[in-house]
Length: 311
Ligand SMILES: [Zn+2]
Image (cartoon, rainbow, N blue to C red; front, side, top):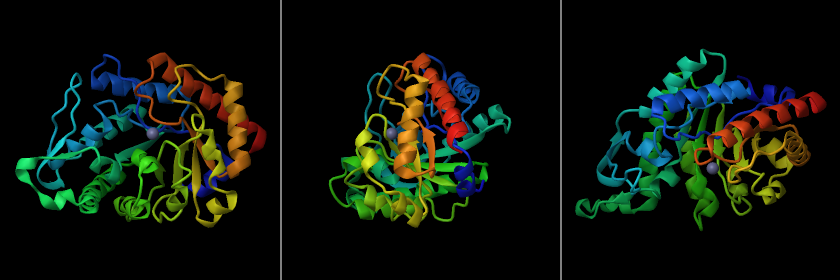
């Protein structure tokens, strides 16, 4: 997909990733996530990340990490040995979603970012692996492992690869160093790439412009309208960046009216130009099912209306 050419002519819709599971088993939840996203008319869908939490989903694929939490008693996974790439469970889910979508929708491959993953792991004291107590060393090893995952997703046919680094917006220091690990995960990836960082990005957005291997910078704007006052159109053009414009609030359990979403999209275009694609603010896993589906449907209609008017 020639992304830059396409975004100028079309308002592409996508998702951040997760979708409600309720009491469904993961296969049924995955099927529902794919069917609903396609039913709503989303251009680039996901597998719904329904199997488990984002951290556990990737931690289970890494050698040297043990999962300890249960749904009733969440607990951080623990580093118990040398880390290594094991098996891409996420690829199985990706392939299942691909089969279900029958090539009628584009499909994103989603990977947790190495910095966020590093802050979501404990190091077992009995292994006293001092090298893993060095934060940037640990992030570097995780980045190399997640890079394998990115390559596998691309090989499996991902139309877009997304990295999630929610922790970037709350990092106190060292953002410029941490940003480089995202580039490392995406090194050599040929399909369009997206970095999702939710929260307030006013302190960190300038660092994100330096990313070499990221095409789309994706943030929440509906729940965090201050984020509108960050990047300038010139920033985006000179750094060849597209904005992933979060335009429905994933923290609020009400469905935004179509007209409100449409008006908010115009606001996004006013700030960032037509260099945007639209999606919800963040993952939808924690929303009631009907609300999540309703938000997607209204978002697509709003985007279509905005597209008819302005493109
Ligand atoms: Zn998020």
